[in-house]
Image (cartoon, rainbow over all chains, first blue to last red):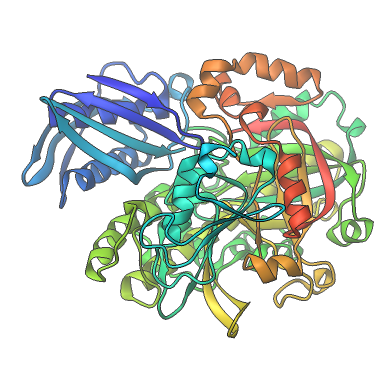
Amino acid sequence: MSIEELEHTADLLYRVRAASLTDLFVEAARALMQTLYGDPSGPATASWPIELKAADRESLLYNFLSEVLFLSEAENLVFTGFDLTVTASPPSVTGWLRGRPFDPARDAGGTEVKGISYSDLAIVERDGEFCLEVLFDV
Amino acid sequence: MSDTMKGVTRAGPFEWELPVGYVPGMRVPGRFFLSEVLAETLEAGALRQLAHVATLPGIRCCSLAMPDIHWGYGFPIGGVGAFDLTEGVISPGGVGFDINCGVRLVSTPLTEADLGAKTAVIEELYQAVPTGVGARSRQRLGREDLRSMLSDGARWAVESGLGTERDLVRCEGSGRMEEADPTQVSAKALQRGLPQSGTLGAGNHFLELQVVDTIFNPEAAAAFGVEAGSVAVMIHCGSRGLGHQVCTDYIQVLEAATKRYRIDLPDRQLACAPIDSPEGRSYFGAMAAAANYAWANRQAITHQVREVLGRRFDLADGEMPLVYDVAHNIAKIEEHELPGGRERVCVHRKGATRAFGPGTPGLPPDLAAQGQPVIIPGSMGTPSFLLQGTAEAMRRTFGSTCHGAGRVMSRSGAKKHLSGGAVKEVLRREGILVRAPNDAAIAEEAPSVYKDSTEVVRVVHEVGFGRLVARLRPIGVIKG
């Protein structure tokens, strides 16, 4: 599993690799949390259920990351763990987001993410590995 | 010519054309404006995005990009597209997540010497205006307030005691889009908007103390209300989480609409719907409501700034008048001169600023002879500029010009090559104090990651999409 930051002039473009679709979604969510909060570690004290469906895998990822972003900002939570099950057919994600309350002293080391972009958003499966590129508007 | 410019035709000293056929499905050419120096940093991705906009149904004239063009998502940053109201589409990809991100300039009678060591006033402003990731509003707002912000924009703030009637006259469109339909804004967006009113945000948003160091056009400067040697305050922010959520929600809605209306798109971020469709009207109403939130937000921040400066330097609000407030991420219905006569079109400006020329209907009477004030922010270490809108912009770019310097280095590159602490120290030696939540925020927004604002504005001036009025030198920066 890996998260790699690629060159993009204005925003943040990540390439994420994982052995399964579920791990790919988990890593993408971790990339989002790291962008927002720098080092989103620490024991979880809150859990939030998540259940989403979409027409295709890319839409599912867009919906999932957008929902994680919304919940983090609206509920003032830093998510540190993701217990997910992601299926490709039909595209769905279910599970729990685990985290703790936002702490300004500890979590102000990142930058704001305005949204998840569909531009060039693609999930590719090759040689048993899943890979995606996703752009965060910052 | 670099590989990036392959397939591009030169159309003038600063003008370049992407011919139809540059990418499949283009309905009109692309047109952009750069000096050769600026062309050296142009990315292929930005040109591809400019061409993609040209494939959208109902686009009029051409897909345009201003001299600060760079690679974004959906439209390029610096992109302008005008669409026929019957045949054309509206797209969140032409507005962006930060709906009505914009900039305003407040003048003061203070000089740099009046500020003293500056550290104290910058710290007080930093404490007064909630800034950075996770910042929460100090205002106690209810749902009714929020609905009024969405409907009434800056007027809500003024009627709540956060400004003066004159402030409204000096906002683009009086700080309000009448097409706003708060019923089209989701519960999620409202939830994000409620605690963020009056907050600056993060990333490239800033609050900057500046000194007016050069006046290029004394008559226009006097009309706009800026004086050489005086301190001004520039505020750059947008519609916060509320606007971000409106964009997120409607990309999903318009994705489905794109399929329903059988629109072929080269990029899903350009999800769109006919302007006069249920989905298009719904997005436009929600976007306009978010734009109104942004104007109310900038007005609330202005009030916080006036409170600090008023207390420290014994100034009344009237001594700190608003020069102007412009949006640079927005879609608006405007009337423009087209080959068949005057026509109402939907103008998308994504990282582009309205630049209405002298005599354009809707300008405040005292500015009608000069044209609209146009505010172009620099970066932390480079100057900002005040320009006036022009007849040439009305004729060539649907009354639009650039919105800033435009980035040349990625954020990852900036963090790799620059240290926030070192950048801060270099700026301090140049007389520019920087206050930010963390050093990484300073590195990511260092002056060297942006194009030279002076060169961008020179091109704008040369092509006539804005005429120079004044230059403002930064002396203190609060980064979000």
